[in-house]
Every structure is written in structure tokens, then in C-alpha cells.
Length: 403
Image 1 (cartoon, one colour):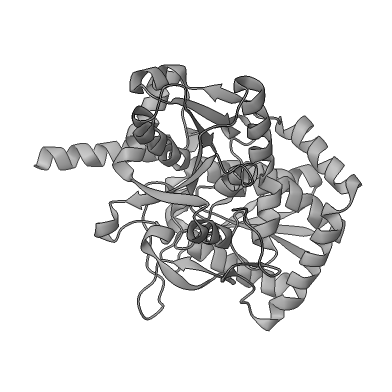
Image 2: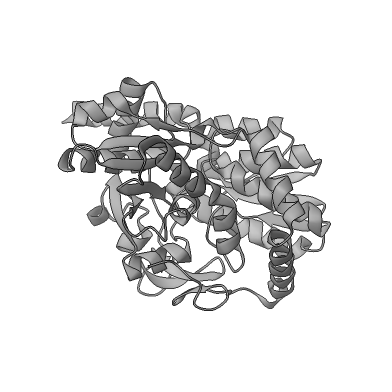
């Protein structure tokens, strides 16, 4: 079943626009501007030209030959978003929103970021377009993603460490929204995922669907057929929605989103909103959230900063409810093991976010027929995660020694 907005900005009961009255005007302005821009061949031509000549698209697909042989069964194929300029899928969206900001006459870009890749991508497009940029980032994420903080500063962005709440992505987004409310006349808020109020979920999906469109074409060219399954990690869900968008009409392709299981669903320390959440409203949209019965947001946990978010894009909730996509859970240990496996077998260091999707493929491959194809969105590279991985391994070794 193809995902469709059942009403403008809604996916079944999910999505919508639940914001303060002061933001209704800016959101209406944004929605109008985006509808006009995507219908403008000149705008879309400029967008795709920059993706091609600046970002380096199309990103290739790579057969993970040695890893697949070690597992038996299905062949794992990687969509290499890690090879984009800035090192992840995030730049597909920031280029689009940056051009839209310029078209609207906005003078300043702001963004929120978790793992830092969206912050880097926003700082990059701000430098490219000659615009000032400020990025909000949870204080905990500032510490565990130091390389990306330095990259943002080098690109000219001001980075604000947010200490309120859990000091992670949710709180960074809260601060960015406050900034936008105050400065909406000259400021464009570049949201990095398929969450937030209408039109952001649709707009980010549309800018990211280049991933799925390319991957579909590349699989047909390389293998003469479509993959059996398309797998991507899901925090807010932009890389997954970008991949899924290319295959929504292809019912033979199973769509699999992978949430961050942290220390396990039973522990309560995870970031699996679809598998462990309930319906609520966060950051301007109705979606599945990790919250108490009283409606208070629960602090999330994941070894991966980019998946450490208590909600999920509303379209993902709709795809889950309709059965068009399924959503599994991978814990920290499994993600780290997949991270190591790709490094050792293929010479590719994946982002910890992407390692969750890879871990799911590693689970599935041995139980599938030889010749089956598992397409995994390798949404980013793992340079930013090296220190975090070393800390995690040291902590696990210490726990093992204590036993």
C-alpha cells in the first residue's frame, strides 16, 4: 500500500500541525513556498545540479561480498550515502532547504542536530550559500560527537550546547523551535528529519527520496531486478523514508525500519518509539512517542546519538499501521558487532546509526535463499563514532572483568 497523506499534512491519524499560533504564519508561508518551488523546473534543476556537482551524487551501490559470503543466504548490498560530501545522507535535505530559504529571502539558517551530521550538512550549505548559521545540539551529544562539533565551527557555524532536559536531540529541537518563533521573519529552520509540523515531514521525505530513486534504478541496472528487502535505521526516520519512497509502489519489496533498542526494550533504556511508544504530540506533530501514561516524555538512550530521539516521523507510523513496512529493534551490542563486521570484512567504517540497519540484515541474510538481495541504506560513515565506540568497548570490557 502506497503511503499517502489522507489530508494535507496527515498520514492517517498521524502528522498535522500542533504548534503555537505564532508559528502558524511561518509554517503557512513555508508550505506555500515549498509547493511553488517543487513545481518550478528551474528550482528542481538547480537542486539536482548541486547534488551532482557538489555532493557527488549519484552515490553508488556496493555488494558486501565478503560479509555476505561469511553469512550465507542473501546478498547484502549497500547504498553508499557515506560517500556523499559531508559523509551522510543529511546533505540531500539541507541543500534543498537551503535553496528554499534563499528563494524565500531568508537571511539566516538554524538547525538542531544529534549525531552532528545534520549540523555539519546545514553549516556546509550555509557556507556554500553565504548565510550565517546557528546549530542547537544537546550537551551530551556535544561531548560524544566532538569531531562534528569542530567541523561545524570550522565551517563558520555557531554551536549552542543545550543542557536542559536529557541534553540530547529532543532538547536541541526544543531550543531551535524557540529561536524560530522569535526570529521567523529573517530565519529559516532547517529540520533534519521527517518529523515536526507540516510541511516538514513531506518536504524532508521529498528531498531524501533521491536515495530510493537512485537505489531502485541501480538495482535494476546491476541485478536486473529489485531487492527483496530494503532496510534502513529509524530515529526520526529521514534516511529510511528517503529509501522507502523509491519502493513504496513495489509491493514485492519488503520495507524494514530498524529502531534503536539501546539496552533492550525490557530495560526501558532505548529509543524505539514505534515498538515501545504510544500516541502523542511532540514538536508539532502527532506520532508515536516514548512517554509516560501522564504524557511526559521519557528520556531515551542509544549508543547512537542520531537515533536517540523519543519520537518518529508520522509517515513511518502510518506505514507500520498499514503493514507496508515493518519495524524491528536492534540493541547496542548488536549494532557494535555489525560495525566491527563491516570494518573487518569490507573495509568500510559505518556510522553507528547505519550499523543498526546492517545488524538487521546480518540477522536476516542466513535465513534467506541464496540469490536474495538485502538492500541496506548505509546512511553515513563512522569517523564521528570512533571515540564513542572505543568508550563503549572499554565499558563492556570493564563490566566483563567485574563479573
